[in-house]
Image 1 (cartoon, helix red, strand yellow):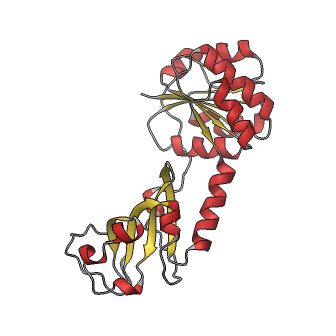
Image 2: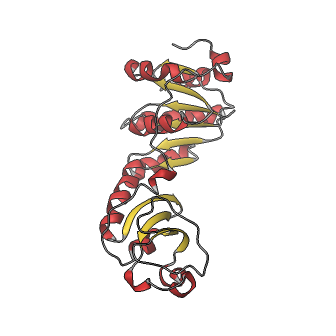
Image 3: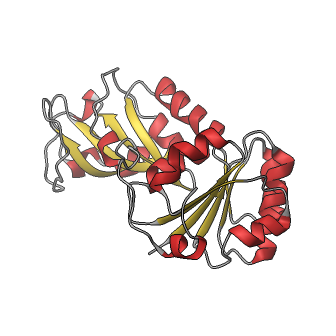
Amino acid sequence: MKQFAIIGLSHFGIRVLDELLQHDVEILLIDRDQQVIEEYKDQVEAAYIADVIKEELIQKLVPATIDAAIIDLGDATEASILVTNYLKKHGVKRIIAKAETDQHGEILDIVGATDVVYPNREAAKRISLPLISSSLFSFFPIGEGMVIAEIQLPDQFLGQTVVEADLRRRYGLNVLAVRRSGATQFDFISPAYEFAEGDVILAVGREKDVASVPGKVGVASPAVSALRPNPRPRTTPKSPGLLARLFGRRL
């Protein structure tokens, strides 16, 4: 079973925690806020109220063999840099740290973060891309500037087959599936499928290419969102796992 440590429970940290609680993993929480620890302590293997800027505390509480450590200390940039470095020296193989600015992210990378995330930047992209493209309903990034997007098919391709429309050549899009007018789910299609009025395509492409697709404004469906369910914290306590056995009873 995979084991994760979440150090700091600001917005990003809580979001990651909510996602991890949907899976069969062991979680260790550390935060200085007693209220947030009290809220989640019965849903994880171990939870500590602690000030993590002390290196000896990190070494004591976080097993070096943990699969990954996630750091979100809010706007305490200096503290996040210190904790990242402590974890690196402690031997943690994967360290995911939230950055507030580009400069902060560069320093996190230098001191040992294996992954640096910019939640504010990603949120801005999610807002701006649909504003730029009237054909884009929803999307989520998959890395290296690539996204999976739900796009209203431009009228110019109605009556054409997938091969004839050639969206890969025109817009750099690889069509994965189509949601027909009135449908709630996407269906896989063949190259001979003929596009019809109201079709919405699920495609993979670069952000700039997705934004360039012409189209008409529509109403987003929950189809793509269903690929990533809204996180719902586990409501029943988990059975004791390795972390629980290592650290004893919960707070």
